[in-house]
Length: 139
Length: 139
Length: 139
Image (cartoon, rainbow over all chains, first blue to last red; front, side):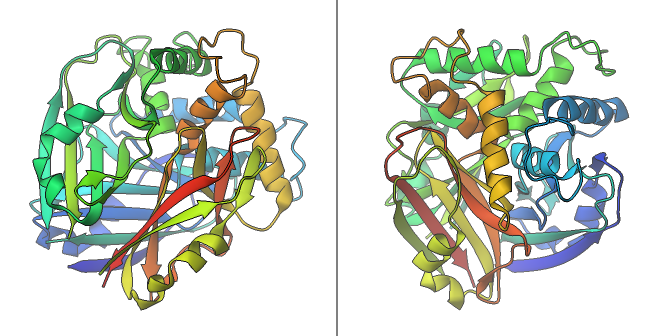
């Protein structure tokens, strides 16, 4: 059983945003899978995906704080600055978290931990809508 | 062919720990797969998985040194500090390495490189037991 | 449908290198897949894979600049120095980006974004040839 769905995520400001419900809602076929996997793939290079704490908004705020310090907009040594000061840091932040996630499915549900949620990591100030390709397969 | 097994990893101190043998031992069905994949998924947000050098304990010690400096416990700017000074850094370190690994299988064995081993990255001082979900599929 | 191919990547200098065409060229079977996935796995611990901007060479240059600063060769606190000053940093850089990528396939092509390309991240000065295992499955 294979199913693939493309999802357009609405524009969000720079930061880390919970999108678990949006993703699960977009692939109703997930409920038919007894054992399988879901692959989430973000088709961009200046935004990314990660799995982390789904309860406290402070956690997502602190993520932004740390990433903005680890890869600052004003390093002075970046050559690729044509698309704005937030562009090159966005590429690097994207590769640090990665653009794809593979999540286990069991008995028609994502078998993730209680506290695990899917984050859209938007690294640009005005990233616009983002395209997410979800592939579900299993038996 | 699909197989899914849940594995409880015993509590380990903060640091990077080799768990390859434990993982392979938990899925005997791996030996029946001619070509396929194994997906390892850690159901937590303050511990993570990575693949790295399986020989020298110094490498795993140096991993801890670097990560503890890159994401220090005492940044001063983290807002999410309720669960202790090692909690918020654990979330960030987890997203830097990631919670899941997909490994190729060939002729009944993991087709990883000679020096590649699976690390459990325990980022908390007292993280407790950790739940790992292993999914094997192939032909 | 399963297909697995091993690819030897020629030696490259320390830095970030586009290898999308090489990878796609090595798995002609990809064209027969209507919906599926391609798993790319680098069998090393001092080089890694990531997906990022495929147009500007400046982006790849800036990647090297950032990674060389984030994990410097001369930290002074690394214990694993026997294999040269670029060895331990290579291990850490590899885990920051990861050794494997899973990419969606749709209608016989990689369904990645327009600007997404596969990077070989070579972290050693003289890493030699690198072995990449590509697994394609789908229907």
